[in-house]
Image: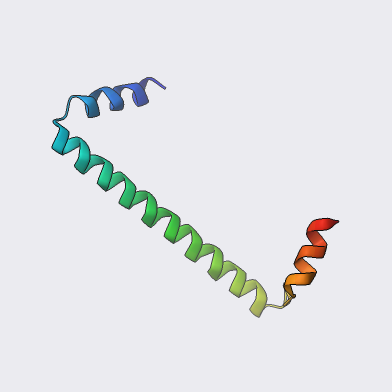
Length: 68
């Protein structure tokens, strides 16, 4: 946790414009990370479907499973 506190202190020592730029960079990196995770999840689901490990279901089937 000490390093996190150090990072915050370093960020606070930046000028306002650099802090804004840092926030922008972090947001873009998080967005890209989530995009990559989603793409990997979709690829995995597609591969499982191609291998017959999953099957198509209706929305009604999914809702019924949630109710169980």
